[in-house]
Length: 133
Length: 133
Length: 133
Image (cartoon, rainbow over all chains, first blue to last red; front, side, top):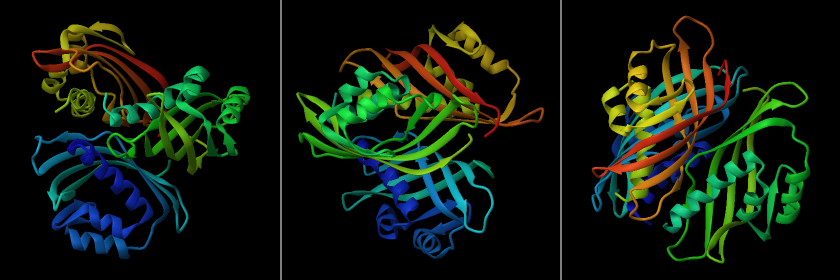
C-alpha cells in the first residue's frame, strides 16, 4: 500500500473505531506521546483515550462521515499533514431529545512510528452544530 | 490506473448508476454469480438487479454520497474488501410526505473478473434512517 | 504526488478556498481561459471569480463536503475529467431564516497548466436543495 493510501486509511479507521467505541483500535491509531485539541480542550493522547473510554454516552449511536482528506506528504517522509472535513451524526439522545449533526474539520499531524502511521497531534475544529437532523 | 484507484471508482460508479437507475451500468458493476444482502433480505445478483429494475419508485430522486472507502487489498490480488460509509438522500416522496435520509455501510467483497473489478458480495447495513432531511 | 492524488487534492482545495472565501487560492485553482456553468448561468472564469468576490454573503458560513471524485485520466495526459458529488451546507442566513443544504454534482474538465492542475470548465449541477438542515 502506498503512503498516501495508508494515510487515507488512517482516518477511515478512526471513524469506524470511534463509532464502535473500539478502544483497542482507537489506541492503535494515536501516538501515545501526542495530543488532541477538541471540544474538551487540549489533552494528552492517554488522557483523551481515557476520557473517551469512560465518558457516559450522550447519544446511542454515532456516524462519522469523512470526506476525502487533503494530504501534505513528501514521498518517503515519516511525517504528514491531513486536513479532513467530516459530518458527524449523533443519533438517539440517551436521555431523550433531538439528534445532533456537526460539521468538523480534523487537522492532523501524523507520524510513522514503527512502520505505522499514527495521529501525533489532532486539532478537531467544530465548524457548526445543529440540534436536529 | 492502479488497483486501488480502480477499487475507489467502483463504488463511485455504483452511486451514479443507482441514482440514475442506469441498469446497464449497474449490471456491469456486479458479479452475476454474486449476492447482495440488504434491506430486502438476501438476493442473488440477478434477482437484486431485477428487483431494482422493476420496483416502483418511492422517491423521485436519490443521491448516494459515499465517503472514502476503507480498502483491504494485497497488490496484485484479484480479490479485495471495501468498507464504505454512505449517506443516502431519498427526496420527493412520490405519494407525498417527507424526504428520507439514511446512514448506510456497504461491506463489499469484490473480485477482478476479466480484468474488471466487480462486487461479488455486498452487505448493505442500514445504520440509521430519519423521515426528513 | 501521483496525478490521481493531485487531481483529488484539486477539489478538496476548492472546498476549503470557497468556504474561507480565499480568493487568491480560488484563483489559483481555475484556468483563467476557462468557464463555469452554475446557478448563475455560464461565466468566464474571471467573471465567475469577480462575482464570487463581490457578491454579498447570504449565509455566514458554508461547508462544502465532497465525496470521492470519479476520475477519468490516462496516465501522463494533461487533461482529465472529475465527477464529484457534494453536499453543501449554507448556515446562518445573514438576514435571518433557515439554513440551506444542497446536493451538487461538479462535472469538471481539468487541465495541467505549467505543471499544475486547474479547472478549465466546471458544470455545477444543483441536484436538490432544502431550506433547513
